[in-house]
Length: 362
Image 1: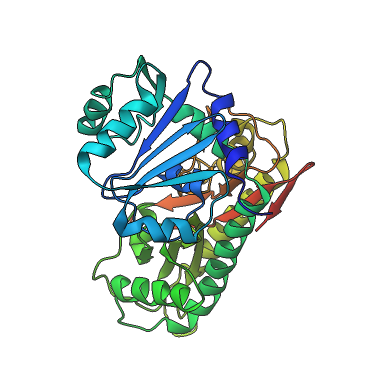
Image 2 (image 1 turned 60 degrees about the horizontal axis):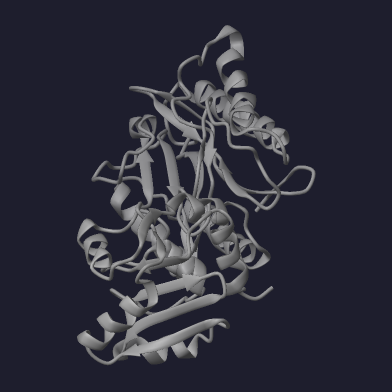
């Protein structure tokens, strides 16, 4: 299935009642919703304006990237070259003056918001929630991109084990992982790759430093990559060099990994359209908390997962309080964990597509 610009615009306006026009403005970085609507996979489009109504969209961009836009041939997108500042201001004013205009308030800087006000819209509304709702359920094109990113990440997580060497640093392993993903066709990391050795694995968001790998250490890697702007996000936990170590904690480490894996399986089995996010979290959390009369109670210290798409956190997280109802064709992460300060931690994470009657691990 090819990118369908008009269909995506329709999904956004469906959730933005009363809004007549929507304006997306990139800054030095792209608004993810610009990518969602256009489907572009190349070009920066800094400070370009995308103006939409329910019939279609107009992209106002500089000569620098006009040809890049035209080459990507987004059907239903009218591409307009900005010749000079005064003509651009006039065109934007003609587009939005007097209209109820939606903006992505979650992204747009205040200065640009004020510049939109100068074009005299009738009213400005924040439609960031409308975009999130539209992006929550993926189409076939989006799923294909996420599936490819997930495949690259999964292969990299298998191959990276060959690179484990005593004395290497977390920084070094993270760089090797990113290079592996790039060699298999990714655009780059979907977020800064997390690598944790030993006790650092007890810190869910520890970023790589100069900690050196020792025999008997946990090695936790939480990473993802981008394919055509869509993200993957996976985690694996390993034990390095148990055959050469004298550590006596393998029984505990193995138990932690089995409990986390079993909790993940329970959560994935609970996924189906119609259940709430908190129910999925409960399936994993209750198992971890109740294991051996509460041996690991209080050690699962974050939400079970989150929606995944153009952004790594592409919508709600699935916490013990999350009321979001799961729908077919959502893509979510499932990532239970156990963290014990001073000892280490285990997290296992996969990307999961919600199907009509269950879930499929990508």
